[in-house]
Length: 110
Image 1 (cartoon, rainbow, N blue to C red):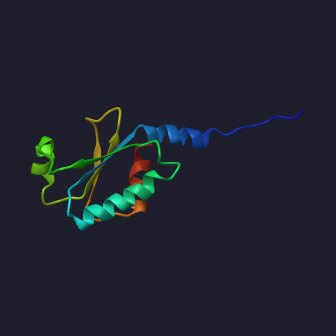
Image 2: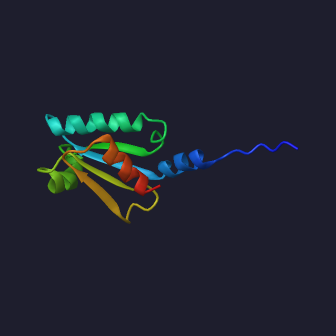
Image 3: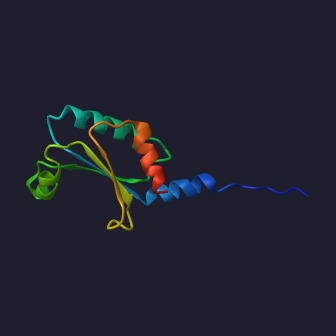
C-alpha cells in the first residue's frame, strides 16, 4: 500500500505571517528612512513574508500628528505586532536594522 504524506508546515507559517502587522514610521529626506524602506522592500518580496500586513506611515502628514509627536527625532521606527490583537505587545526597531532583524522580529509573532 502506498501512502502519500503531505506536510502543511510551510503553509501554516505563511498563514501565521498573515496575522502580523508591520508599520514603518518614516519621513521624506531621511537617509536612514530610505535604507529602512529598502530593507522592508526586500523582506516583503520574499514569499514567506509577502502576506504580512505592511504599511508606511509618513509622520510629516498632518493626519499623523500623534506619530510625529512620538517619533520626530527617532525615524525610522518599525512596529511589529499581532494584526488581530493590536492593543497587545508591540515590538519596535529603531534607526538601523537589516533583513535578519526584521525577519526575526516577524517570526516572534508567528
